[in-house]
Image (tube, rainbow over all chains, first blue to last red; front, side):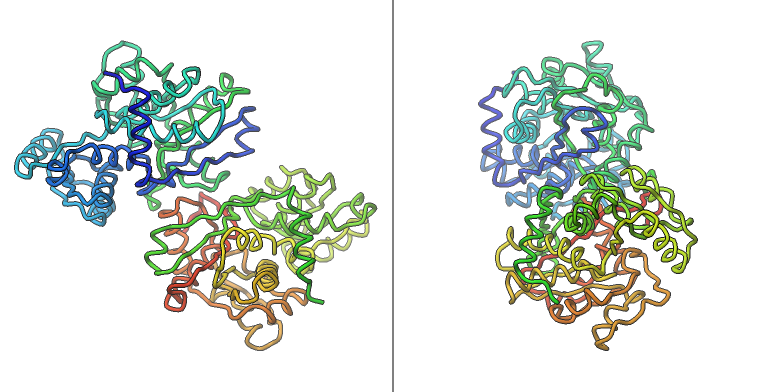
Length: 313
Length: 313
């Protein structure tokens, strides 16, 4: 059930022509503060501003010709909506995106700008799912889940693969966890490449369903999550949880103030725009700094899509 | 009087070990919008967050041993204060920075953090100059002007040198102009390297003394400048103006709203933090987009030091 090293290698090769091999940045200020060496894999510089284009591209490329001709459909109001829309356009496929009627205008415009068809639904989980099913039947499009899908996980695994190919002998890799697609992919590739590299997840206290799931050994629902890291409000699924259980050593939880402080710190010192979800991984590193001392750390900066008119500082 | 190709080459070699060869970024969105190819030389990723460390380092390295033992002094409340402080620390030299009593606390902390001695003065030009002279006499430190100094100009020239070595056959280079040290250095290196590359300056309408100076053939004072690009409020000097006159083809002026829009656009699309002065160069490119069509353009992103608690959007 768990994808192999070969599966990861094929995904790397498959999506290579359609995604950026994003830069790896370092900061002497961060290294001095932590007394460690940190390598930031900057998926904020990725196409559409987040790692999600990787999974979306891989999922579309795995479709049979007749499936691809009918297009793909998903429900999302966040980065994955834009990712699937852009990936579909790059690969000459149709994308249908089910978005709640209260989705921010800027997100709708991004999705529409990539040429996808937006299907509006009521802002409830029920409406999202029924609307998606209805249009899936109508169009014959293939449903692609934003995180709980092996092809999505494999696509996402390519970010840390690139990082580990560029930076020798990492000790540990940290990635944020929301739906679990990035953390599962990261842990998977890391373990297949160098089993000795530890993979750690980072999660807000206000949305700690992954922490609780790992602790109880059972997927816990994400009930009324409250965090500025809006990309991390979703819950784990049956495809990514087994991978996380097997390969992730632990999940560090962080406070909202730590997320905001880390975000501001990285903007100020590294001069890069990162979104709150990415700041969660950095906050985790600072919160548990003693355990990271003298280690060689990889951090997945998941994305940089932020509403600049509504900043927390 | 005008430095030679050899002078530029020596500066490149001299300061190389002490500064970053900063990354050159591109943006497919920008290229599509302008129907041109734009290369951003990202001095916001430079040490202390701006190109100014280049000139400061070069100036200190040009001192005789006994001068260097006595240290350097300048008056500045902006990026050059931090640059001279950091360069001095890197080169085991003392730095004295004369700062007006109303300088922002964050700037004082940056300068003090780099180990420089801050000397407070009243917030007037008279007090700045007399305080500097007094402490220069007392300490024997060498005065280093932030922009009107051949060694500063030569140090600054190294940014575009690196850019032109990395990117073949640029047609035009755009840099913001305030005191003139960056624009003069950019025009100088560009001309010596490939005489056919055009150098253009960019300046706010609210601080257009360089535009007027070039037009009248005489340095015009910067009287009561008003712009969000606070790094560009200073005026040209007798060392950099002849270089600008000789090698800069023109200066494009931009409105404040264009500066803010360009800054926001770059943050949103390229996910990098740039300061208003850098946005002036980008605004100039968008304002005069028709003349840049199909050209290969280098833009000097001068820095990324911004007060995140006081953004214009």
